[in-house]
Structures are given as structure tokens and as C-alpha cells.
Amino acid sequence: MQTLAYYGFIDPMYFVYVGPAMLLGWWAQSKVKRAYAMGSKYQASSGMTGAETAQRILNVYGITDVGIEPVKSFLGDHYDPRNKMLRLSPDVYNGRSLVALGIAAHEVGHAIQHSTRYAPLALRSVMVPMASVGSNLSIVLVIIGLIFNMMNIAIAGLVFFGVVVVFQLVNLPVEFNASSRAREILLSQQMITAQEDVVVGKVLNAAAMTYVAATLTSVMTLLYYASIVFGRRN
Image (cartoon, rainbow, N blue to C red; front, side, top):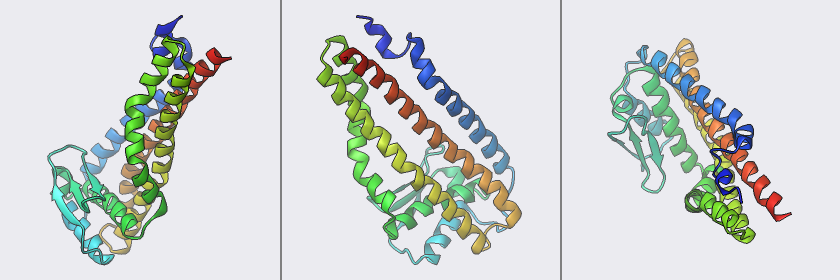
């Protein structure tokens, strides 16, 4: 039945489909590391920490119901819309580098999206439970369906994985918009200079590319398994 090939580890076609996206992901990760290392060397001329930057932006937008707290997680920075909390890693919360200010402002960008009811963010929030289930079950259902020649189960797995792909596609404008908001507010409030914005832009753009690479990998993985499922079905 060639069942082992369906796991994607020994089937050469898997790498034909997904290989280029994996290479893009590797390149994006290396670009992020270089950008973060470079940006961390430059201290913001404003002298502000990431936490101070986040609070100032919240104040500018009149957002008073969002808290800021440190988390002991490297690059674990995120905005929690359910609890309305900005969680910043130690290097960002206490840091005064351009990386710290850029990341803090990016996460506040999500809080601004939430406050202004930015449609893609609202859609992403609705899709979180479905995407979580899909990421855990999808490939398992596909492989079980292929092993036991139960195509309905395999197709159900494809549908679940499709939800994950749609979630990632919806997430792209959310992330890009948060970055553009971050740079705009940092400049307009003179928390960074135009020269510093170049560095911040490199950091945020590099981070955005990791989302692009992850999304492309998921799309190509879906196409790979779909080619097998519908090939077997026909």
C-alpha cells in the first residue's frame, strides 16, 4: 500500500512540494537572527524601555484597559486579547534597544487592532479553536484514511488541515498591519528617528517573513496530501 510514503519522510514528491517552502523558512529564520542581533546592538535614542514604549502608545490611543507584564520566555512576546494583556519577554520589557522598542510596538499594534475591531484580527480570534483542533487531528486523519483506504476520513483530515491553512492566511494581514502600525506610531511620537526606523523595519520585516514561510509550507503540505488522497480516490 506504500503507506510509509504518506508520512512525507521517504516520498521524494513530498520534498518537491514542500522543499522550497522549507528552504524559505530556513532563510527567514536566519534572517530574523541576523536582524535581531544587529538591532540589539543599537540603543534607542529616546532611552525608553519596551514596557515604557508600549505604555506610551497605549496612552496615545486612549487604551486604558490593557495591562503590560513581563514573561520569562525568549521571544514569547504576544498580546492576549482574551485577558487584554501585553506580555513581553525580559529583553523586550526591560530592554532599550531598537529591537525591544520595535517588538513592543508591534504587540501594541495588536492591542490597537483589538480596540478598533480590526476585521482580520476578529476573524483570527474566532478561528483559533478550529485551527487548534485541525492542527492536532488533520494529518492523523489523512494517514489513517490512506492506510485503511477510508477516503472519507482522509478527506475530513484535508478539510481540518484546510482550516489551519486559512487561519494562517488570515494571520498574515494581522501581522503585517501590526508592524506597519508600530513603525508609524514610533515615528510620529518621535520615539525613534528616521534612521532608527530603518533598523526597526528590518527586524519587523524579517519576523514577518517567518509567517509567510510557515503559511507557504502549510499550503504546499495541504496540496501534497490532497494529491495523494484524490489520486488514490480516483
